[in-house]
Image (tube, rainbow, N blue to C red):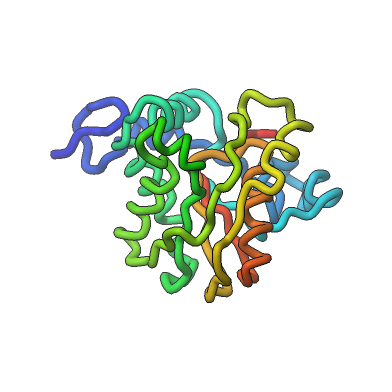
Length: 216
């Protein structure tokens, strides 16, 4: 018998049924970014209508709220790497409909941030998904060449400027569709900037895959 990674109770998987029930998703969301919408609304959200993102869709396991936000913080800032497996396994069923030939790509950290933290939480999630679904995991394909400030510390209008020009791709990418993996999506500005660079490098379709997405 395993123990739940989150609460340590006996479980048949890395996430017990009680903790799994804490994952929450809206019944209806924006077709592109996944933002929660009223049940009868089938159009794009205001942000996507005003400025279409370079990513084509967002897949996520839960809204970013308590205690999900605590799990993300444990992984990102507390070196609780076992949480990456939990997040990956929560995403696995949502990715089954996407052909396994579509490769994964982890949102990169700037080298200075990687040295400070010692690991890339997005890579840890992507690595587990790659192993479980036998998908290719692309390395050194997307580079973060700008040491940006932490997005969470900035106001919404500052976030786009913070990540503008932050990413590049050293070579053209020979894949039509890629899955771009990250731990959390707030305003989506980082995903927009990364997807823009991927499309400049030849990718036609970018699906963002995040464990949690903010309500706004």
